[in-house]
Length: 228
Image (cartoon, rainbow, N blue to C red):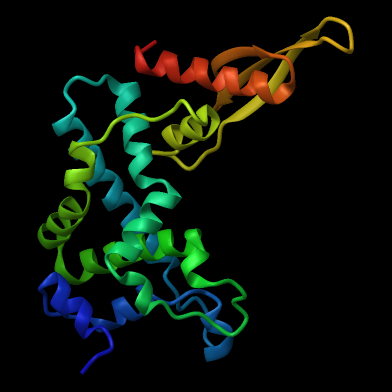
């Protein structure tokens, strides 16, 4: 019996190439212990990330006709962010199969980035092994109810919400720049702008640089939401 038999039973399929699942759950640190090179989940993660993004985009579009493009990007980002995908990884029990090397110092359960990566790499392996139809069905089942009932939450951390929204389709980061500061040293007002791929997304003011950047992120999100 394979170590992955519980996984196959959970998702109701018979594997064609079990080596794909071995790779999907192997962290790069395992190579040092096993004496191998590049025998890990990184390439599968790349593939799975695109598949998950496609299905979640479709669900957002289908279940939220009231939202414009900007809101859809923010909503999508909430489901494909590191914390969310790490939670799905544990919810599906994928974390139980992860292989790491002796050099890995962190607790797997607390390593959100690894959990996120494994969730995506498993989807990539599933696609290569089982094809698009079953993979689409499984990913849709994972996200459907959450996306259907999803709402946008940007009030607590606009900078994180903007970063996630912009990275929903691309991996580039947003950047901030203080473009002016006025007033005496004890009562300065800062003006910040936020950029993505060289384009200014929004501006904001604040009593310190962090507050100005947060205001700029809020401005960018507001403009995205109304399609400006």
